[in-house]
Image (cartoon, rainbow, N blue to C red; front, side, top):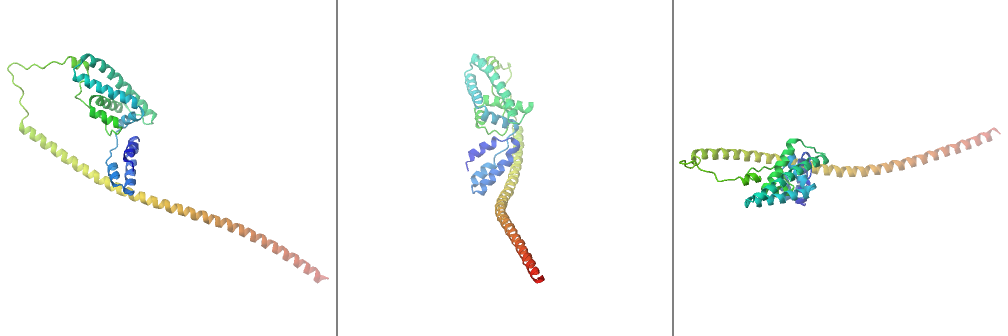
Length: 279
């Protein structure tokens, strides 16, 4: 199985169709003996509606997405060099490109029969902003396989923000703020570890549920294949039986005609006999 192609096809589907199609592909891969592909497919997550729409932008509006990502690279270069004039020019261009692409996304959703509301449209715009800010986010967007919307809060793309940046002044006679208290940090770490363990537990449970559901699906796939084969044989037998019925009808009709002819012949012979006796 060409897993890459299968994954691309899955992320082109509407979100509501994704899970069933993914499980079917995984089951088919497993039945065919390709356990590696089956495992890779089972791990795929259904995209949110905003992530799905960004994926479709990559598929249907690839040139516009490339323009956006190229602009993001230029903005990051300008930010590193603190080029205020370049940042002001690129930031104005950024706003225009993101707004235009976000509007285009809503129109594309309509064309694909999957209209979106304002909240989803805002998530699309947030994701596009993240792709402008972060090279890693840009690559995620470019893949066309997003599963959730992206956010980025640490990218200063605003030209005014960079141009007005000044070193912060320390209050006279005041020392730097103390580092976080060790006890608080340990407590926070403990809480975070507990949340991680709980999340891992939930994930293992869902993986077990997925494995069980996939196994059930594999059985139904095999059963359907067997039933379809039986149905094909039954149809062949039915066609042969229909031929036999038609042949039997023809033979019966011929026999009926022969019987009628014999009866008529018998009646004529009897009539001649009766006439001879009377003489």
